[in-house]
Picture 1 (cartoon, helix red, strand yellow):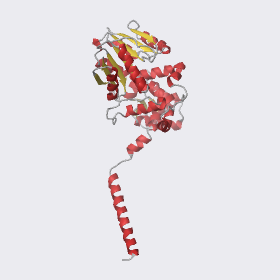
Picture 2 (tube, one colour):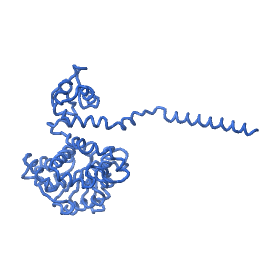
Picture 3 (tube, rainbow, N blue to C red):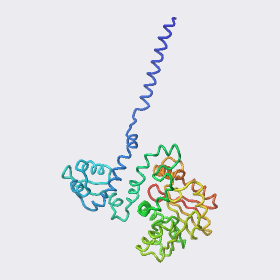
Picture 4 (cartoon, rainbow, N blue to C red):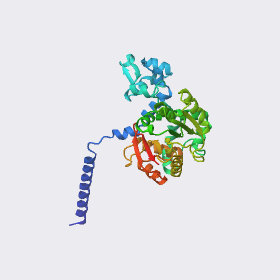
Length: 366
C-alpha cells in the first residue's frame, strides 16, 4: 500500500476518534443545567439588591404598612426608572410581598423581612448586613489577591483591623450592633439547650454589648454574669445592661484577653471570637479559658463551625474566606479542630451542640 493510502487511513481514523470523543462529551453533559453556575457567578446581584434595600431602610419604612411603588419611591427618593425593577426583584427574592399588578400593586414586608429586617423588630439582624454593605462588600473584590498572597486586603492593610474599629466610635458602634443582631437567635438557643442551671457564674469574653449575659441573666435568675471586653466597649455594654434592668446581676469588666488573666467563672463563653485569630492565638485563648475555670467548669464557643468533612456548611467556609480577606491568617474551623485544640489544653469531654441555622456551640469541660 502506498504512503498516500496510509495517510488517508490515518485521517479517517483520526476523524472517527474525534467523532467518538464529541459523542462521549455530548453524552456526559446531557441533562446538565448551567443554572447553578450562573446563580453563583452572579450571586452579587441579589446580594447587593438586598444590601441596598437595608441601606435605604426600606423594610423599616414599610413596617406593617403596604404601599404602592410610587409611594415607596417617594419615601426613599428613588428614580422612577428604578422603582419597579427594584421592588419586584425583592418580591422574587422573597423579601417583599405584592398584592396587585402594575400601578395597582401594593408592597409589604414578607414575614421574614418583618422579623429580621425591620429595625423595630426585636429580632432585627440587619446590623450585620449594614456592616457587609459598608465595609465587607467592596473588599471581596480583592479575594483573588488574598488567595495569592495570604495577606489582608481590607482598607487598613497596614493597620490591624481591630485597632481601626476601636479607634473610631462610629465604626465601633456599628460593629457591636452588627454582631449583636447576628447572634441573637443563637444566644437564645444556647440559653435553652445548655444546662446553665447547674452553674452559678458566667463570664462572656469579648462580650460586646453584653447581649449573651443579658440573655442568660434574663432566663436564669440565679446566674451572675460578667461581660468582658476592651475598656472602650464598656460604656456600650453598661448602657445596654442598664436598659434591660439587669445591672445588679450583670457586671462589666475590662481588659485585654491576650495579656490579662480572664475573670474566674464556672462557665467561660466566647462568641465569634476564636475565628478572628490565627492558630497560635486560638490556642492561647483556649488555654486562658482553661486557667480561668474551676474543675467541672465549661468553656463554650459559638461559631459557624464548618462540618468535619468540609463539604456542606457553605456559610462557614465563606466566613473563613472572609477572615482571610480581613485578617490574613485568621480562619474558621471544624468541630473536630476545636476538640483537638481543647484536649491539647487539658480539657476532657467535648461536645458540639447545634444552635440555629449553620451555627453551633463547641463545649469543652474541665
